[in-house]
Image (tube, rainbow, N blue to C red; front, side, top):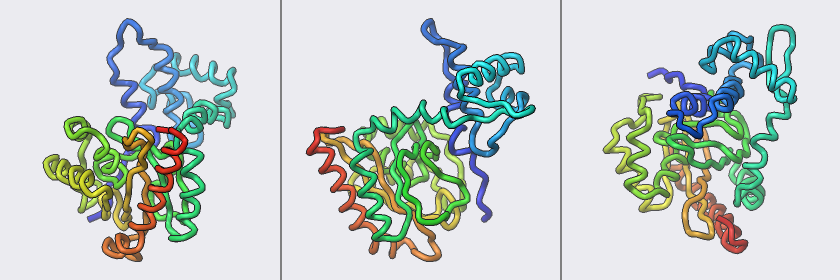
Length: 277
């Protein structure tokens, strides 16, 4: 069965969430529109015209133009002819969050060592609603059709890190997240039955790891474990991903699970020793 196209992993989640949020007395519409304009630049195209930005953000051309010119004045956007694009200054909006993550400094060198040992890509992610957000990634080679980088978003229900993060929630809360998820079959193997997904999350909670075999993308297989903070709660998930035709599920578990668990325990121990998370 051919792989179905995914919505853009970086921008689809935040834009949709911002657009659907019900305004209240404390809701600043202008600020929300500005965020939607920024999120319109989603990685599929480095440059967008005014019309494209307006359409992506759900705004009028006049409204989008005012926001874009404001962002240009502040240095977050540049205009080249008729095309707008983000500048490197936009990274300053996300960098404080990344550097404030309690496991950031501890995890990166451990993950680099794991990649050198296993020769497979290693990533870390946190849960945001029904999606996971990549916060660290040490690649070896491109194995996915989706271009993943820090800030990329993927569905939690069909990813190994997503199921680990859901398992870190209270079962009732995890069930609520699954009920709010847009469950769709991305490959012929994707599990979309909510009762089965609940059982898979419960199983992950019980054994402390999970393996997902080609549910997100044909040919992609990954195994994930939790990173636990000083409080004892799951604060992130870490995975090793590879190609199914080269490393089938049974071999991935045999070769990668113990080193992955060891690395996660090392990060968790460093977190506990420094009272983080």
